Image 1 (tube, rainbow, N blue to C red):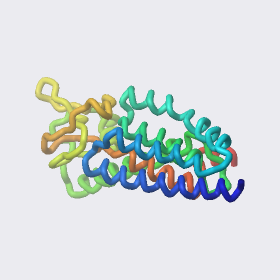
Image 2 (cartoon, helix red, strand yellow):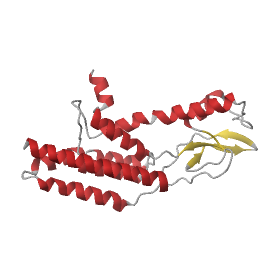
Image 3 (cartoon, rainbow, N blue to C red):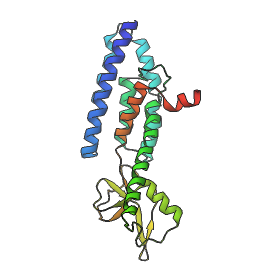
Image 4 (spheres, one colour):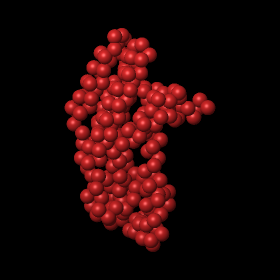
Length: 230
C-alpha cells in the first residue's frame, strides 16, 4: 500500500508539474488556454487512480482536494482571475491532491494561498521600476491632478508604460485632467490597453504564480498555515 501510494504521488506530481509549466508558457505567450487542455490533463490524472488495486483512498483524497472547486469558480466569475487559473487548480486537485514532499501540513487551498503570497513580488517590481524612473528625473505623473495617496497606490500596482502590452489602463481623463483609476479590472472581460505613454497595471499571468505556489507546496508545504501553527 505504501509503495503504491508513493508511486501514485510521484506520477501525479510529475504530471502536475508538466501541466503547469507548459500551461504557464502558453499563458505568457498567448494569454489564452483552451479548456480542453485542462480537461485532458484532469482526465489523465483521474485515470491514474486505477493503477492501484484499492482506489477508494485515492478517490477520497481527490474528493477532499476538490473542495477548492466552488471557491475558485466563484473567484473566476467575479473576475479576480481567469478561467484558465480556476481550471488549473481544479485539474491540480485531481492530478496531485494535496501533494507535498515536505512534512509540513497542506490543505486543498495551499497552492492558491502560496500563489497569493507570490503576488507580492509584482508590487516590488512596480515600485522599483517607478523609483528608477523618478531617479532619471522623469515626471511620471505629468498632467495628473491626484492626491499623494492615489499616486502611491498607482506606483504599487502599476507604472507608466511607453508601449503597453497585455496590460490594463489605470488612468482616465476628466475635463482634460488625468486621473488615477483604481477600479478592479475583470480578468476576462477587460480589454488590454494599447495607448502609448499610459499608466497601466500589468496583466500578470496568475497561472505562473499558481505554478510557483505548487512548487512551494511540494518543497515546503503551506506557508501561511505553517506560519500560524508556529
